[in-house]
Amino acid sequence: MNGADTAWIIVATALVLFMTLPGLALFYGGLVRARNVLSVFMHCYAIACLMSILWFAFGYSIAFGSGTSGYWGGLDKMFLNGIDADTLAGTLPEVLFFAFQMTFAIITPALIVGAYVERIGFGFVLLFSGLWILLCYAPVVHWIWGGGMLADGGIFGEVGVRDFAGGIVVHETAGLAALILAVFLGARRNQTTPPHNPGMVMIGAAMLWVGWFGFNGGSQLAADGGAAMALTATHISAAAASLTWALWERIKFGKSSLVGLVTGTIAGLASITPASGFVGPVEALMIGSIAGILCQEAVTLIRNKVKIDDTLDVFAVHGVGGIFGTIMIAVFGAGTWAAQLGSLAIVGVYTTVVTVVLIYVCKAITPLRVDHETEVNGLDLVVHGERAYDITS
Image 1 (cartoon, rainbow, N blue to C red):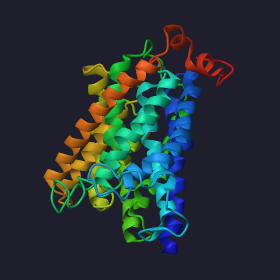
Image 2: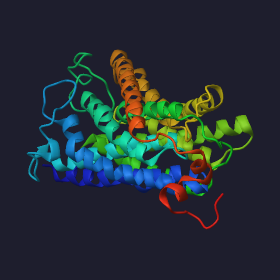
Image 3: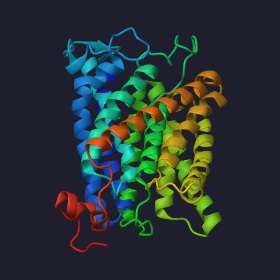
Image 4: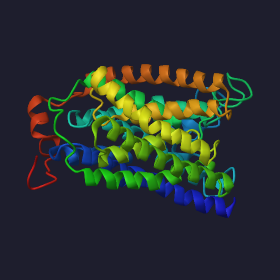
């Protein structure tokens, strides 16, 4: 065990949990109508709790178990069987590695929340998220980070896919699942109400930015120069994307919005995630600068051209950003084109199939969408019996 590495990953674990609670909850909560803000908090918080238990019970073993299959890790580490305070994973206590990966398992299905807010059934959220983390996310983790079929020595030969902190594992999977759920749900009945609290959105985005240092810097799994470079690249990309998003907004609409500026931040963070351990600050500046415009155009395409009500633009920001960053690894020569594009395709098809099947299964058990009256009156009061504010909008 290395004490410095252990100390850093303890901090990084806390930072990644901070991304979901409260960062993502506030970011998404501010973007919805006032009568639905508590439902967003409820989704994020309940998902965090459920994913923690499922990751402990089965998910970690599926992803990082000692099975020799290239497809899944097996069940030998269920409930952390055989792991105690002295068991090591590299230079870290394995129980800490488990906890760090658990925070990734929490935020990935929480990202999907943004696609279905204001109209989805709470029971469906929990059932779908729980099955999805075990049947979609955990196997993909094994393929890429657990030494599975897409890693070095797998189907792409000695040099497998390069995904430092989750461009494919987190952002592609969550983005595609979000888009598919939005299609199945259909559009909201009221799409004209603006974000009820842009200030809350900014606070949430700022927390995500801070937490992302643990997300990307912690993925080095060591307290060394690689972690420092990943952290620096992350920051530069986020700053660049924020500015280009705001500039592109001003060119197109004559004004730069606060919500746009901070959405650009998230686009830059998502885009640098897979590449942060393989590029330097100059490459990060290029990735972020492009991401601010690319993801904004993706928002316009999905909203206005394709007419899919991905409510908070999960696919356009996270999905497109993660895919773009994964491709840029090959552009900068840090990975092979075959492995980067091939892995994107394989994970994309797998995620799509599993997500569609799970939607059909889950909606046969519990309603996918709330009724018309609940949607009009807001999920907070009808579903959860609470109200965020004395005056609703």
